Image 1 (cartoon, rainbow, N blue to C red):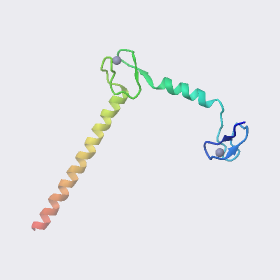
Image 2 (cartoon, helix red, strand yellow):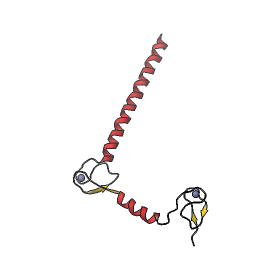
Image 3 (cartoon, rainbow, N blue to C red):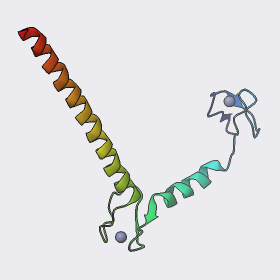
Image 4 (cartoon, rainbow, N blue to C red):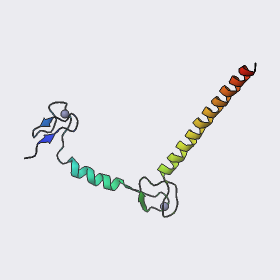
Length: 104
Ligand SMILES: [Zn+2]
Ligand SMILES: [Zn+2]
């Protein structure tokens, strides 16, 4: 018989549903169920053409419609550009003050 280990604390546990060490739930059937869910969650439905596309795709390969991830990436890019712009502005101000006081 295979000895079960707690995924949380790594201690060897017997045939119990809950780890006696840390209280972590030990579901024997969780592996097969989670694998199926994972396979299903890899695909999402395109909002525009209703075809199944990869979850992490930024655009639908069928119709080119931008997915939620694509929209989020664009938003993140915009946020990054704002931060880079702010840093560049601060650096230019620091340089301006630096040279201003050096010349003085
Ligand atoms: Zn544990
Ligand atoms: Zn599509």
